[in-house]
Image 1 (cartoon, one colour):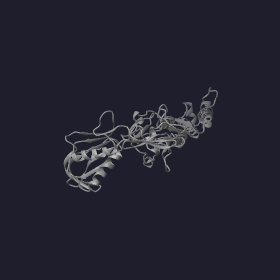
Image 2 (cartoon, rainbow, N blue to C red):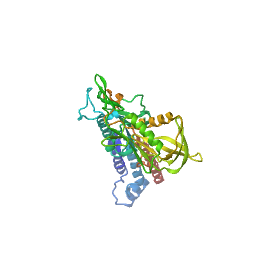
Image 3 (tube, rainbow, N blue to C red):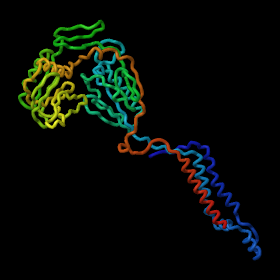
Image 4 (cartoon, one colour):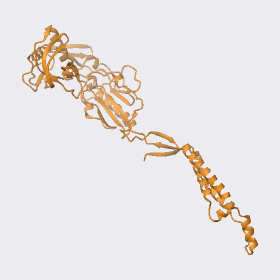
Length: 437
């Protein structure tokens, strides 16, 4: 059903008997006179005493009486205060999942080490968010899941995408104010900093989780309750891999990757069971040509093309150049967590300070290189505080073309019924006067 009627003043319902009372009263008050009809004189007397309306009643109830009763009926219905409640249109909710590494830590009620059987902070926060959605979203509503590193997913309420549990180790806590919208819920482990105007949050909280906080070269740094300790040669085996759709890859870039990997204690190429922490993918770009590129104090002549944007929301355009007309912007290098895509088929020796060239590419590799599994920065491992929850502002309805287009809320019918009753009363009065003449 599209809606339901409720009555604001149902006690007026007893008055619905009045139209029937009116019909009975008019029938009785216009009953023809009773007399013996044995002579012609008496017939004439009855004819002289009968009114026009009475003569009509003798043939049946006059039409104006029915209109008068209908006017009284609709007038009483208006006094009862009917309200037409229309179906609430579907709404759109949004759930923004915190991608920071701390979400993969075990949820602990007191500081310590994870044993491996505890739920994660993400699990706890998702439980609270799912419970709120179950209580506030209907099957007709839509939920937009914002998962950093991939395209948003929009599903029916009650369905949680499997990818929401996927670890995004290099991602950092997002700028929550960019998602401060009605019906938006942040799934995180600690209360967002800054005031939120419309969005809410489900924060798991959790105590500090001790463990590995960094690797430097071949050394591993672990955090304990007493402080931290450096373990020589304790870093896990790591590797960087070069993948290319053409051969050979630019010798200049292959050399700078080797210098960076040696300084970080990372194997190149990957070998054995070493964990791949960075992939460099050389691709054939669109609209190839030769370009002069520059960045961070170095310049070089390259041959390449334009890279198409990847699906990941975190992908960054790192090196770009305009085409010959100076209009379109060619992206030659794009970076995402663990993957750097390059549409560079050849590169001449760079000009400028060689140190600038090495530092520029080194910072790129450092930023997007994945930490080894189990390595989480100290600020991520610290206590997230108590669990907390803030309900967002009511979600907005879908656009008319996305839903039925039916407005929500309640519509008062009093005025419509009163107006219709007035029209019927006027029509009844007009008929009554025409019969009286």
